[in-house]
Length: 499
Image (cartoon, rainbow, N blue to C red; front, top):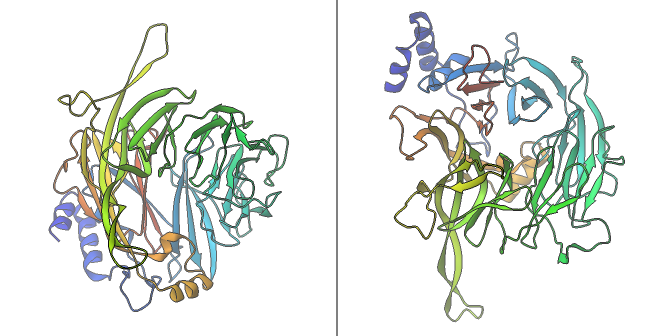
């Protein structure tokens, strides 16, 4: 209440009174822990000002979009929030539950106008994949739905243009990736990466489609090629992916032509990230790599632990989480004694920083900045903190906006099966209950809390995602009862932090 009072002093008197009344007089959204195995869908709504009051402490601007028509009594219920950043446009994709059906909304990420809204055939367990002309929804059984992304709105009509399976019955071994011309699907039935052309149609056929390695070659450069178990990274030029032969492959995104395959010398638990013409990936050797797309090493960081999860890169800051390896006492096979076996547990979040050095008449040099010059034999991180499942959302103005979220399993297998039949559980996230969700604003150079009031409880925001793009310094949030919010570090009025 103290934080809300301080926030209200920054607002006009009339608005402050309205927010205060809203925050005191209406119940908050249903939280996990109710009698139902999943939190029930909201049947009444808070005003947008209720949520905006919770964000007003941040040194950022706020925009909002209301999915629910003001004439409706029951809110549109949000099931998923995704943000697409690509060469076509930046947009917010929301999947809802409304009247027994699911709809997908495309909202402009900057002026918050609606591009379109369409019913979808069904929710899927992979995030939406965007190409120039289509939005694809694909599941781990290889079934896809393709929706028209570009044409003018057709109110009330489906934008579905194609559905089924791609030729060859493609079964994904990991989450696919996309750019504006292709879908990139790691496949189990051929242990390959398929580049499916979306230039002329949404069926994945055409002379621009390719497979890597090509059928019948059995490997690349004498190296056996195994399954791909981590999502590739893709831009218009390059697709980067880790194979189970412990190599990072970089191939031409348009043709599938081989470019490089640096050896990681161990398995990887991090999907690659492409940023600033570098490919970032971790290895169980306890190393974080930055490779140039040519396959040349930009820099290598030795870590205190095994890197895992997503790697976040912005303004030449690199954030990665690690696992600590320890010996755990376990029973022997005969049950007569015990022995030690290596296990892992959360370790640290590490913040690295690198610089680009221009070299006259030669290629620039990338250099990792040493966080502790007293140990010249290794490049230390700039700062670390214990890994508690946090994820960076945005770097802006010398600050890193960090989400600390803790989830837990809480459903039995029987409850999961029942809720899957009802369409309530589709993604892994649907199976989890959020225990806490907090946003902290840290000094990017020290990792310390920038200001005490920049520590917000976000339990009323069911979905939170960030942006790793200079053109869109923003955090996107959504509530179950139909609101989408954007907090952003925009420089121009009305641009919402955009181009």
